Length: 357
Image (cartoon, rainbow, N blue to C red; front, side, top):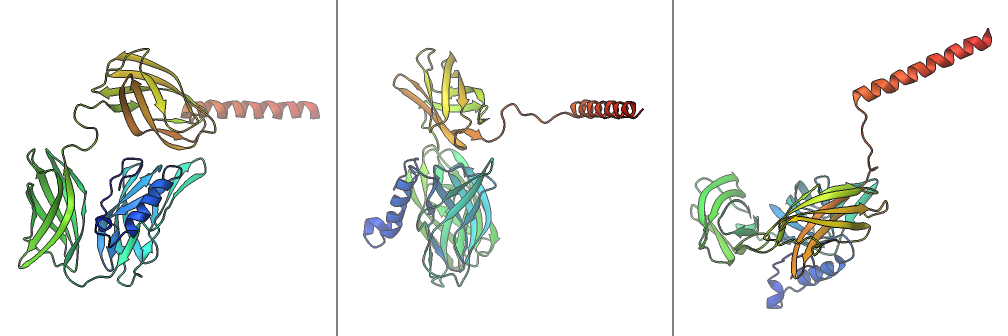
C-alpha cells in the first residue's frame, strides 16, 4: 500500500486473503490524508500484549513536532516520541499484559502556534494481539537500510531472555556489534555493502540455544531520499515565515538545471503566493513568497519546475503564526522606554503642582 505522500506500507496479510482489515483501514486513511491531517498507519501494526517495542507512525498532511502527543488507546503507554519528519514519528511503547485485543484508533495532537492545534486521526491503525507466550521478535527500527551506510538497529522481542553474547544475522549485511539493552531489546550496528541484495530481508537473533526469526523484518534499498542523479532541493533558507510576511528564500539544488526566466516556483496549499523567482546559477535560485495573514499554519511542499525537470522538497517550508516584523526589545531599548516613561511621569507631577499653586 502507498499513500499520496509517498509512504510505503508492508501489509502481507492482504495478499493471502486472510487478514484484509489492516489494508482496508490503511487505504481509507490514505484517502482521508488527501484532505485532512491523518495518521495513515503504524508499522508494525500488530502489538502483542505485554510487549515493549518501537513503532513508526506514518502521517499525511501532518505537521509533527517535538511537542506532538500521541494516544493509542487504553492499555498502551507511550514511553517516548521521536520526530523523524513532519509526517513521521518513532515511538517506544509498552502494551499492558491485560490490554484488550482489538483494533485501536491512533491520534496525534500537535500545537502549531497562534492557538491552533492540529489533530491527526484515522481508523484502526494498530491492533493489540494475544501474546503467544513463546519467544518472538516483534519489531526492528529503522525499517529501511540503504546500501553503503552504517546504521544502529533497535530490535525488540517478547518473551525473550536476551543476554550477552547474542548474535544477529541479516543476509548480505555485516553486523559490526550487538549490545544487549534488556532481556527483550537489542541494539545492533550494521553495515550495508554496495553488493547487498535489494528488497525484504529476514533478521535472526541467536542467543545460546534460542533462535528467533522475523521474516521480512526490513528492506534494503539503494538509496534513501532522491535517487542518484535525480534533480532535488538540498537546502531552503530560511525554511519558515510568519503569516502576513513577505519572505525571500534561497534555494540550493542538486542535479538541477535552473534557468532564469524559465524556472518557476510552486508552493502547495493555499495562502502562500510566489511573487518572483530569480535564478543565479543552475543550482541556485531565490524565491520571494508572500504569506497571507489567514494562511493555514504548517508545512508546505516547495517545487521548482524547469521545463520537464522538477525538483521538490516535501514539507520544505513552514508557515508559522506570529506578527511579522515583531521583535523583542533589547535592554537598551527597554532602558530608553523606562526613561521616557519616567520623564513623562515627572512632567505630569510638575504640571499638577503648578495647577495647585
